[in-house]
Image (cartoon, one colour):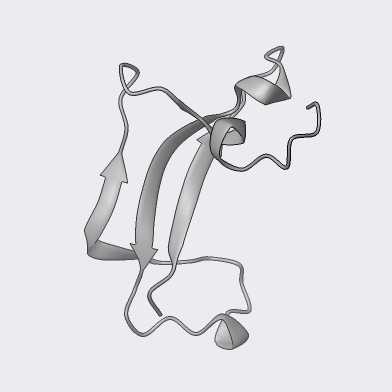
Length: 69
C-alpha cells in the first residue's frame, strides 16, 4: 500500500547509465506483496503516468550511490 513502481528501459546497445524512466504507477490499494505469487503487479487505475520522449529522466541520475555505472 502506498508504494510506487517505476518502469524503465535500456535498449540493446545503449549504455546502462542511459537507462530511462518511461513511466510510474501506484500499486492497487489492496495489493499485498506477500500474496503475490505470479510476479504480476496490478497498477492503480487512476494513479499512473507514461512519460513521452520529450520527458527524459535517466534512472541513474536519481538512484545512484555515486559509483561509476
